[in-house]
Length: 602
Image (tube, rainbow, N blue to C red; front, side):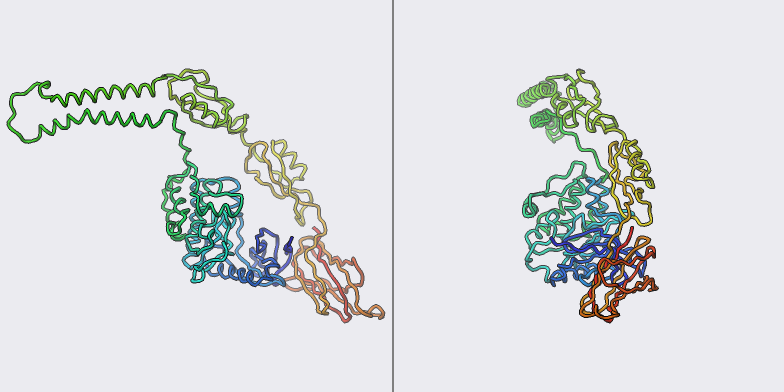
C-alpha cells in the first residue's frame, strides 16, 4: 500500500514550517503550518508524490489553486501562495480552527435555526463562486469548515470546473462524493450551479435529520437512488416552510431547483425566525379518528343544510314581488306538503347521525388506565392508544434508564372517561455531574479524580517539549462543563521524551553538497550518520571528506561545524534548545557516501 511521507517538522522553501498533519484526502495531505516570514498560522496542502508523476493530476492540483485564488469571499477559504517541494507541489491557504461540519454532525442533528444559518452561509459563498462561473461539484460536510463566531467557510475546490463552454460537454466520469452527488453528476452529464444547490440541499437535509437522504450498499446503489428515489420525509420537528426549501433544492431536474447558491441563500434568509424554533413532534392521531367519523361529520353538515334550505327559500319568496298579501295564513297552511316531507326526512337523518356519533364516541364512556411505568416511550404510547386513551410526555432526571416511564397520572387501574389524556413522566437518566479540573495533574491523579466523580478517562499521550512527562495538558469536556454519570473525559497527557527523527538526507553520489531546514522542539538534538569513503582514500594519510555546518534561521547565525568521520552509527549532539535550524553538508575533496538523520529529543 502506498504511503505518503509525513513532512511534519520540515520547512518548505525556507518559509513555511509544517507543524503537524491535520487532514488527508485522496490526492494530498494538509498540515498545520506557520509562515515564518509573516508570522501567521497557515494550512499547507501537499500533493502526494505518486500523483506528481501524473500530469493530469498535476493540472488538477494547479486548477484547484487557481480556482481558490480566483474566488474571493469571506465564506471561501483564501489561498495565499503556491510552491513546489523536491517531490510534490503544494499550496498555502487560510487555516480554519474549529473542525468541519462533518465533525459537528457526528454529535447528531442540528436545531433548525442553526442548520439554516450554516446552509445560508454555505449558499451565499457558493453563490459568489457561481457568479464567477465556478462550480464546486463536491459540496459535503467534510468540505464545510466551522470557525470562530459561527463563521462557515467552503473549502476544497479540488474537483471544481469552470462553467465555460468545455464544462457543458459530455463528461467521461462522474466526479463528486456519492452521498452528496446530484443526479446529473451521477449520470456523468453537464453540471452547473444547480448541482451545487443540490449538494447544499443534501447537507441541509443531513443537518436536520441526522443522516443523508439516501444510503446504499455501494456507490452505484446510492447514485441510482439520487436518480430515481424521492427523499424520505424530514422529521416532524422541521417547520413546513424550511422543509419546502429542502424539497426544492433536492428536485431531480436542475431547472426545478434554485438557480444558484445566492437564490437559495435568499430563500433561507426569508424564512420567519419564529418558524425555525424546533417544535415538538405532533402527537399521533387517537384511534377512532377514521374515515367513518369524517363521513358522519359530512352527513351532519349536509343534514343541517337540508334543514336550513326551506327557510332560505321561504325568505327568498317573501322578498319577491307579487300580488298584495291576503289574510295571514297559519303556519300549518303556509308550509307546503313537499317542504314538510323534506323537513321530516332531514330531522330523521339527524336522529340517525346523532345515534351513529353516540355509538362511535360514546359506546364505551369509560376506560381503565393501564400500567405504563417501566415501559419505553413507544411502548407506553402503544398501550395507551390500545386502551382508547391519549398520552403526553415530559421528562426529569432519575436513576432509572433514560427513556423509561417512571410515573403517570392518572394512576394504573383508574376508571376515566374515554379519550382522557394520560400524562407520563420519562426518565432523563441520572443528573449530570460537574467535570473536575484535572489539567496540570498527573495521569494517575486525574483518573482518580474522575472516578470519584463517576466519570471515566480516555488518555492520549502526546509529545510536549518542555512539559513534565505524565502531566495532563488538556481535557475535553473542560472543567466548566457537566456530563452524564459514566461519561468518558478525553485527557491529553505528556509522554516520556524519546529520540524522534525529524528529517533525513543523504549523498547523491555526484559530489554536490546537500542542505535541509527543520524545527527542533526539545532542549537537545543530534545528527546521526553513516559515512564511508570511495576508491583509494583509505590508503592516504589524510582524507578530506564531507563536513557539516549548522546555522539557526532566519538570521543564519552559525551554531556548529564538524567533519563527518568514517563509520556507521556516528552521532553529533547539540544542546541549542528549540528553534528553526539548517544543516548543510559539504562534499569535501575525497568522494564519499553518507546518510544522515536529524533526531529531536522530547
